[in-house]
Amino acid sequence: MHGRVQGVGFRFFVLREAAVLGLVGWVANEPNGSVRCVAEGSREALDALLEELRRGPAGARVDAVSTAWSAARGELGGFTVRSGWHGGD
Image (cartoon, rainbow, N blue to C red; front, top):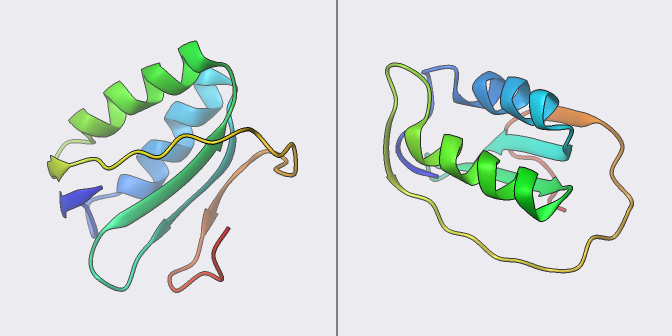
């Protein structure tokens, strides 16, 4: 997600939404000021998360959400907030 998405509780907003939707994965701040999210679950739940990501929490301004789809690996357990400068997928 790009825009005003850091310093506004965006990662914890994603954490809550993912939990409600039963998704697994993670969300993290990126060095360039964006937020990155990797999620696995049903297509319906993922589409619902994308809708929420485009809105964001109060105080955020989401200018763009980039998406990339791939087959689920089944390696993710739960949904976590990763600290900044995470090691990747």
